[in-house]
Length: 266
Length: 263
Ligand SMILES: Nc1ncnc2c1ncn2[C@@H]1O[C@H](COP(=O)(O)OP(=O)(O)OP(=O)(O)O)[C@@H](O)[C@H]1O
Ligand SMILES: [Mg+2]
Image (cartoon, rainbow over all chains, first blue to last red; front, side, top):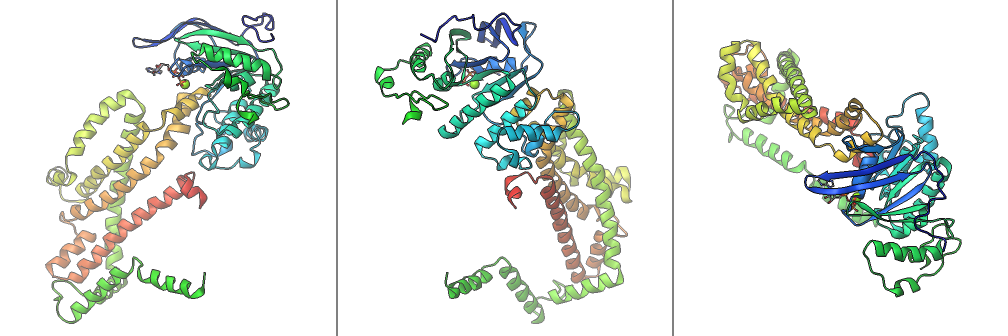
């Protein structure tokens, strides 16, 4: 078995980019995150799964520095960037100015252009954001995040609003960008297959705690078999019973970049 | 498509155009005047109005008085818009500002500006000051209300997105909040402009010795309905001009909107 739990040897003792110790967050009487411990190594790709309302966005907002942490033990890098489910481009700024938002110094347009070329949108550099398709807008959001060379890239269901085909392309793009820039990534997703296809480590958040943790050491693209087992386990953690027929219908996808145990083979 | 149907359609659309009914109205009006159904002291004929307009332009009577009125509106607007925008920024961008300013503005909203005319005459006399002051006072509110709610209505998700990239508070205001509130500001500007012209009409009834209102008052005394109609046309043109001006600004400033961006 190549996918193991409590597997730590792959991550030698380096200073983590993210470290939360016994972190809690509540809204009034509603405790959303409850004594959570988390550390993310530099360049690690972590996927965060969990039920709706389980506190994933709340955790991500803390890591993005959007909420005050009230003196708790929270270490986050100063260079970080977020891609939200909605691209959140400023409609009154042309695409390249959105990418360059907050950047200072000379050659800002060139930097923005380089980032846009990386996501394949160099030709839309002077477009207005409202004229972009959903997938294009999300790619601009990725460019905007990556142009800052963040140590930590936070993705909150970045592909949830995209169609299946665009999503698969985005997965490939994210992986490529991750390989080139090597930020640590924390990606919130509802899609177990997405998590299995992309991440080094998968966390399941429930009732404010991490209830399961899975490390994946199999190469991306060769995760068909392992993925199927993992998928079932993760769905179990998420409290979703899956009948065995669900799995038997799946076929290996072999060379495809993103192994979808279910959808992509059809 | 066959040519004949195309032509047919073109003719049909020509006669369903929006210009048809006004033209019919004008023809009926002219005919009524010529036939003596509409006495000159009640309403001058369109042709007479045009004649008077040309004459008043030639003698400089209309341009001179229009200029006086224009200065009043301009002065009132500059003062009113500055105050309105300043107050809206203060109330929109800070909690203390909101607590201090908004309640007063809401109270002010309940008072019809024109009802203040007698008070303004008592305070400022019957010269230029009360006229300009009334216009200024009236034009504060539309621009205040719209800009204030525009600032408050800026999508918090965009503000958060910008904050997540480490933008400072000032940068967020500059790059996100102000551009986001600009469409509302322009709506407010349009209302303020039309209100200012409305107030101008009334304010110039206060013992004016020049201006459009003066022309109207004089014409009334001499039952010159042609001059009155000319002045009405000028008021309408002022309103249209103000609207066109804001539209022009909108086209420039809001080029990012998709319906405009495509064009
Ligand atoms: N600002 C807030 N004020 C009050 N309650 C909040 C606030 N933000 C989040 N919550 C509550 O915290 C809980 C967790 O919300 P959160 O958005 O983190 O869930 P999530 O895991 O991201 O869910 P989803 O998968 O649906 O996006 C929810 O019950 C939500 O109602
Ligand atoms: Mg969420």
